[in-house]
Image 1 (spheres, rainbow over the protein chains, first blue to last red):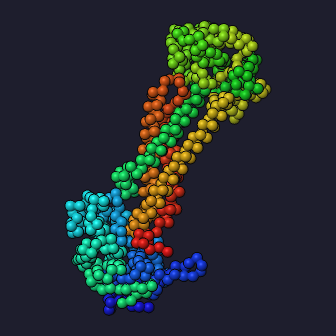
Image 2 (cartoon, each protein chain N blue to C red; image 1 turned 180 degrees about the vertical axis):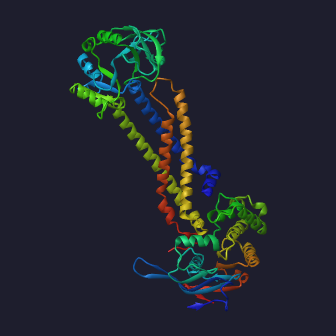
Image 3 (tube, one colour; image 1 turned 90 degrees about the horizontal axis):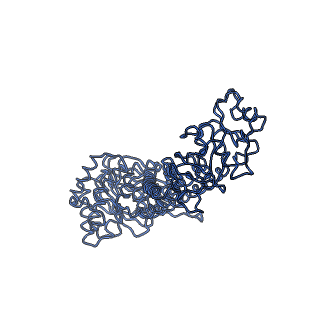
Length: 236
Length: 370
């Protein structure tokens, strides 16, 4: 077991606490594949952590478990004071609606919705807040420099603009934790740096914790610290 | 749900193929239903028009006018049954009619009824040699005041008015007195000639006096010499009616099944295509029930649009098809039934995609699965 937690955080300033988490996939021949091996990780409420590792090392598995997309085989996961270790699928769905934001590797905006509607979809899938959600979407688009692109479809936006819309969507539910899955992998170096700068500024200005999954060491300096993962094991 | 409807609005082309195919299927369904209704209406109008409670045939007639004979003594037995208030004789003969102005071989198919109790829409029986005609004969050029010639004997019948929806066995009806019918029958079908007072059937008005239904009471009173039916049962018993209904309903059932398969296949393909999008939406917190409800909403809207267009097309078709050329009867009830059947098929068809929607793994959105 490797503890990569920062020192002595109280519960209230901790966005994520994973303790001794394992994820094991049983194979057809009776053997097992260990995707995550006794991982322990703690994130402060406004901390940005780069999760670095080669393909197949388990970084997306860790990210998925932290975000309530996958259930762990063993261990304890607490996000924003909510212990999700024993949550069933329905509870995890509600948890994701309320406490986590995702920015996917290929952005994955809904192609037939414009930028504003792509942000509002989060509200439609969860607690419908109506005007409050519309105000928040407008505010986020303004802050992300997309106010004049609010009515553009994803196909009418550049790669960087799409990435910004995806970040806006991840922030719509005012999450405690945002998970970025290879946010710069589809971008050139310059645009990648701009996006990382944006992620850093947006997370810090909101005091929101984030895990940035990447295999690109060049962008880790935008994060508060880096955590390496190899063969499902975390290394400081 | 809103997401699904937005997709329909923004990407209509994506659903165009399914909508066109469903429209064609809906047209077929409504057209078949209209044909069935038209055929049945054309075969049963004469009995539906009877303002009676029971139709009485002779015991071996199997509900066929041609095979039935009711003698005066049997009629007396019927009239004496408790609860019977009125009894009228009824008979018919099917003959080709020569219409002035038409070619010598261009015969109109007619069935001449002789009646005592007036059916709905008709007054007391007209004088000898005169008859009321069903208005479908107008398509054959028949007009009020015209004299048409019936059968090989060319028996003259003057048309003195029209009545609606009284056809029988797919032929246009003529309504005359029993004396006119008896005369035309003996002139053209000497082998089927009936003596005075003998009818093919009786129509009876009244109601059961006790627990025994009126039809059964009549058959008891005649000692089994009669075979009596309520009017609805008599309609069902007309030779060929139930066979036509069964055949058409089977074709309609197959058509609905085809609609179901089309919807199931189309939305199953759409679900496969959307697996990635569904994964993302689930990761963002969408419930499977929300995604499936969206799928059903799309299927219902596409089907409703197809059914609406089809309904309009069938109504237009009904208007442009010349009266009497094919037995098409378009009714609101048939159109509504067809739409309901298609909507049910849409929902059931979508159900085949439910398992696939449930199995979409939100983890697929960030590229990790087992």
